[in-house]
Image (cartoon, rainbow over the protein chains, first blue to last red):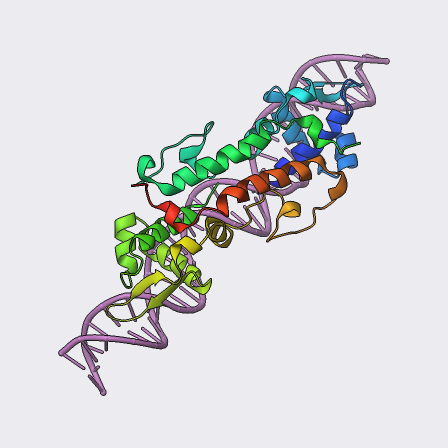
Length: 137
Length: 137
DNA sequence: GTTTTAGTCCACATGTTTGGTGGGGTAAAC
DNA sequence: GTTTACCCCACCAAACATGTGGACTAAAAC
């Protein structure tokens, strides 16, 4: 399951996608409009900024805004960033690969199954972008 | 990611699938062959028994064994049982559905995306069974 | 029928993650 | 130089993950 943090991140990103190219948006505005705890949201947005997804301005007229075209930001990228690995086993993860203990990958049926799950999942997450977060018109 | 518990469960089930129709297998044997902590494994197997996946015999000649044909036991069933929901959001879960807070499902893009992810995942997990845990010959 | 074998059950311990909060610091605008 | 608003650090409680220990029970063997 996605953590609350991830769900908050997506809510915020959806809001910033709506407001794309309309200047910086206050944390407090996102917080109240999307019902996300203010201080928690602060941490999340900062993390997204450090990951180059968002940028910010300080002082009056400041706030957060998308650094890139939302159509170019993949859902998979956000999930990996905020939620962690997408794969269900370390040994089938592309971005967080780690060898399994006591498990020969070439002779592990679970490995193969979870690789298929990973591919099926990525097939969706890598093709969806932030614009897909907005409800259809 | 799958919990260690889930990984242990699959290791044990793979072993019991190998030994299907060969009588009960000792917990201690599974533990040593598959390198799973004995007492932890005990809890896991008991849980699988209560869920009607396994059955057991006490006393000499006793142990655990698969209650059904391994080809009839879906990977999805085990994951749900030991690891919890397969979907990434409560609001798209078939077996653990729960409404999201402050989220209109009909107007939530993330909802749709995660529904697609769920379907893609289930497409694999519902078609794979315990026999697929064994390495290919 | 008592001993041995092996699963059952419950309680607890410990470490990590999750979901937050509080408060001061810093940079930009006015 | 005051106000605005993001930046950064430290801490906190609850939940969950990953086990362990010990007593109990049922079945088989003798």
